[in-house]
Image (tube, rainbow, N blue to C red; front, side, top):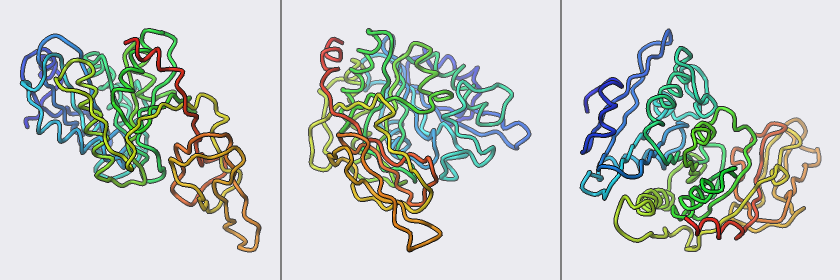
Length: 344
């Protein structure tokens, strides 16, 4: 794989065939440049899809599945369009196995659209915004829960003002056929790749594909199957959509968490002892866990109760918690988006 600059890479988005390169991003005064691997497979006019992994360095399903697609996919496997594969958006974090970059301590997914003369993480965000996103119509950023969160494998999307773009986004979400598709309201959306892509008028999905900093055959299958399903849904590949097996359940559900009232926050610092696993159906007021005092073992634990009826979609996995930390998200199953998704 040759190392190439951006001026070499740009023709790859319109030149038939499979092209692999490294994109060098200067680390400025922090040291040597970092190199982002990229593969572009072009088969003429058609949809342009970008799959990214390694936005956070302790989330692995995305990099594993994208590496597989880089090895296995050729231009002849596509009917049309352009496929862009980037398994490690933040190489320093991936190499360190950390959520943030060990070079500048920044979270890449809070630095978009980036800065041309900023820190290395800000420069990576700027390069992606300026030189990669213009060549994509659909972006799927493949995440997982990392070391601190246990989360149902899912595709997260947001409510959009454009009904047409909302329908197309729902169509991609449902085509992925993850165990869950969720419409969610973010606490801190500024600086996210999600927000930048959506402001550019493109289709975006944030795939949360596992958790606890580990990988299982199930979560890799969900990721790999979902990526192929999206390409089939967009008419870029032949074949019917397939539903991955996850915990012996074959039905994909659509849920929503469009209000902050569905989040459970830690009222105190301490050790969080969970009572309920993800994917469980819970009732409002039901105990989801308790917080134990770090200072006094005789102090009565604080019970943390479900903020709403629904499905425990996400749970904090690292037992040591700070006051105000998000402990859980309880989502509500819904079918009210079906008609809009079926319209695409």
